[in-house]
Image (cartoon, rainbow, N blue to C red; front, side, top):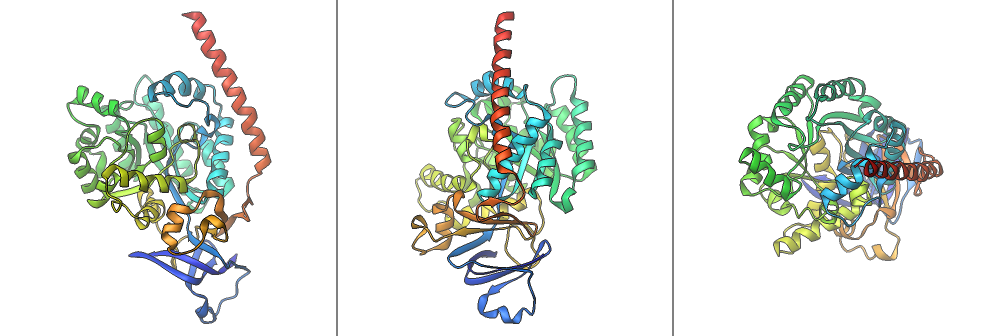
Amino acid sequence: MKILLKDAAILYWDVTLKVIQNGYVAIEDNLIKSVGSVSDLHLLEWQPDRVLSLPGRAIMPGLVNTHNHAAMSLLRGYSDDVPLQTWLERDIFPAEDCMTPEDVYWGSLAAILEMQKSGTTTFADMYFYMDKTAEAVLESGMRASLAKGMIGLGPNTQEYLLGSREFFDTYHLAGHGRIQVMLGPHALYTCPPDFLNEVIDLASELGTGIHIHVSETLKEVEDSYRQFNKSPVKVLEELGLFEHQVLAAHTVHVDDSDQKILVEKQVGIAHNPVSNLKLASGVAPIASLLAQGGLVSLGTDGAASTNTLDLFAEMKLAAWLQKNYTGDASAINSEQILRMATIDGAKVLGFDRVGNIAAGFKADLIVIDLNQAHLTPHHNLASLLAYSVQGKDVETVIIDGNIVVENGKSTRIDEKRVVAEMLERGLRIKRDATEGMTEQRKQL
């Protein structure tokens, strides 16, 4: 379909952030054909199938969420206000043991629905039963970087590697390229060096990247020093992991020498401020990494730890945290935050021609209704989008040239069915996990 969006303010990147106050975007098939001022539309000589006149709206690139565990939307609010290890070991792991492949499908679909309606058009995921998440991605029209989670402990390590190879062969570039597959070793503390060497070899063979949690907590770093006499970042560097495209989730506790490595190797960093604060993991030194030329993006983490998948909320907190963390109100600005959430997020995930509104880029964009009290006046569009917009202000979402959300409603997903499935499955998981814990106590 040929779609013309016009009469809106358009935010895009041309080295720096640019805004066309009364502009148009012409979309043909899955690509942006042309972007410009409405006054120049007569030069286009192009007949659209559909025209959307959008006065009082802003059009910006779709948001890119670079770290998520989508199916954990089933565990939203399941365990809150407890330390990380208690949260994981007492509550989350037993609940995950009760999840079926169909649970993962519906949990992923619910997460995709939430993300799309709040402006996210691309996300990165690492979890189990990942083929079910891939199904949800394909059906919903979403764009995603998917990694089948791997644990390098115990007797089944080769099964993880084989499963990841099969998942890559099946889903890499599926959906006309909307899915890209990475390898997903969970973290250094669950994937010892010998196993990571096998992951690195497989990444080389497949020509793909690696999605891994890095230095999320102080305990993780302290344990690494006890075991290896060096930080997780330095262990991974010595293994040669950073010679590949790497998506490093969190990087909260990284000292100056760690930061230097991450910057020099251009490791893609997924900053998850809401999850890190809620679980009391700490504050990642994002302003410092950016100042050194680091490649930083934004993620939400799973809804079990972050409770909402609204990337606009992550934008605000990411900026405010760094300002307070450094004591410098100018440490990070709205343009940097918007880059992290769009074009740099796409770069971190290795998606080509995604994250910008420019001719030849994939038609992934969102329309935001600015005709609201909390979004007026319009002194500075970048500041408005980074600091004032909420996910609920997103009106229309286009992914790969297809309208997936229109007037705030999904065009692809049965929202009522998703809600019903989530309510039923969430209750069953809680019941099964609770009964399992009770039975375990009886056996002790």
